[in-house]
Length: 482
Image (cartoon, rainbow, N blue to C red):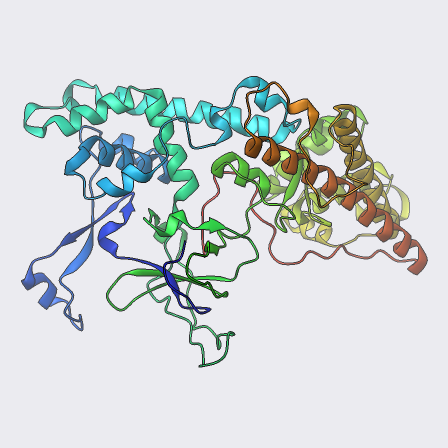
């Protein structure tokens, strides 16, 4: 909640760098000589300094872990330090182990009620990764040449004990995946808003960081702000090195503040954050079995599969063909490109006068399928996606969770099949919203494709499906960015 009234684009939260928790950097004071030697530095005597791996972990093991594991180990170390941690208050306000709300802690019966193969497979993978990295780091920490020494103190031994506890290790990674933010470039500054105007002037130019320069961090206070995808959000650096977050809305004292974590689908919101958003503009539906269905229907033969696998540039095409991705009122461009390739082959367009329409297996040939190739193949692509989306929607209906949408799609209800699972009202409501949003998304894309097919036939030419904005990521851990 906000303590004071906050106008639009004024900071709703500011955090000094001394309270950041980063994977590879620590805020620490520099000597006065070092600060003075920094040409042009204002009276700034503190910097972030690179950190070695936490003892007793080896450099080799540390470098083999992704950012979210390294940051999770840092969080475990702060928890192990107890009263000696500079982040004691922050660690104390985090949810307790097993209480983050993330589905990784749900029972098998509760997960089955999702009726969504994509999320089930992702959670199973998440559990394997959590346990695999835990065992890997624990084995490394217990190696003879890395074993904790008396000199290193009890903190190191407590860290090793935490690595030996699956629930504690999972807790740290769950906190990181639900709270970590990508730090903005150092050039990110506050937006300029003229007095009496809620719309900022043009934001200063900011160069995005290179992939190897991206930094993730836990940001106390900022990471407690709730998500609303339509909230304009800006994160920037203050002159003193603190990080501020502002949004394009005004708040009165006592209001709940909201900010956008970026374009995050309900799949990722539920898996990593433990909540969903109704009418989420970035929601997706992943047809987990599309590759299997294509093979069963004789549309994805060995020849085409071999060509796709043999072409390095076709990696995304192959991935989005095996698991078709549906956006809200659109199809992911990579899935559309893949389905066009399949449709050209399946429609017999590789023969006769239209032989040039089939994919020749080269990287250069892939770009031709980012747009409609012909009216016949585009209609075939629409038909294929309509059939599989309708098939998936029918599966939801057979599971008994698709009723009542037609009566009042905007009013989530507590589905009866969630009885007896030990879920509180909030959790049941969340699952109800998640499932109804998925069904609505499938029905929406079937209607959109049907309309586009009719328009194409009326104009006697293929039309390309528009996609507004950048498609949200669907693979890998979600990360907050502003």
